Image (cartoon, rainbow, N blue to C red):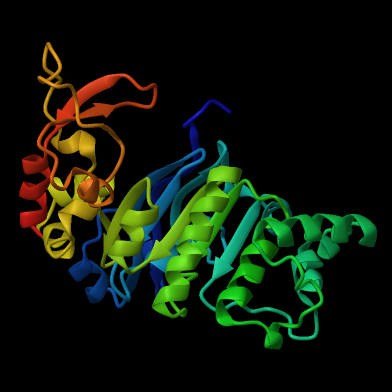
Length: 342
């Protein structure tokens, strides 16, 4: 598969609850919320089309009841969509048999939910190895692989602990390790950190980013916390009433909201946390400033991450791309202007 090729594609996916949902939708694919209410139907997912690229962290956001969890369960066919197409590496999952879907979930998908659902009678090693046991892998091999994953998530030394002997953050690490044991190509995480205390939640976000840097999975991540989303996401989809209002990078959503709802949703977000240096830098001058640059900052860095470095600087900083080439310049006043906007 080519880099950045779509791993998962949703085309006009619907999930309606209520009697006669399929017939009603077949007669009117453009059903509005009022149409659904008149027909006695609930539009949990309405005409959703999106793509998740290979190696991307794709975050789905929305308020409670917006349809984000239902959509993810439709993607893995834990819930059957009413209509549409869901393509996993080009194969329409809605045409797969129940047995084929079980095999796909066992071998190619990983899932982590808000509630850890660890097996209390199994140790950390037993919990992580359990999906491999279901696959029929011999005990020696599955325990070897489980130990590798346990070490990967930072739980070495606790292989023989039971869930009741672990903290909430450690239990969530076991849940993450268990989902990774099958080496999934597509990883679904439904508000995995929302039950954790703020400090542990931040640590788990760090751990998640570390794992993604190592593993480069294609990830669909659900959260209702915009700070968490902008920290983790390559792109974000914002849902309302079962439909997707806008898909874009965190910068796109804050700077160019497509609807009033998205603008309101992102209104209180600190721009310094969202905007990259590239978004506010000036073009590089033909000649470096007198005395040279005060230093270098990456174009991809967030303003909040480099603000302290520019504090008190009396000269501009060179902005560099991934190859080290100077692509712009940034001054202390440029950063202060963004910080003053909140």
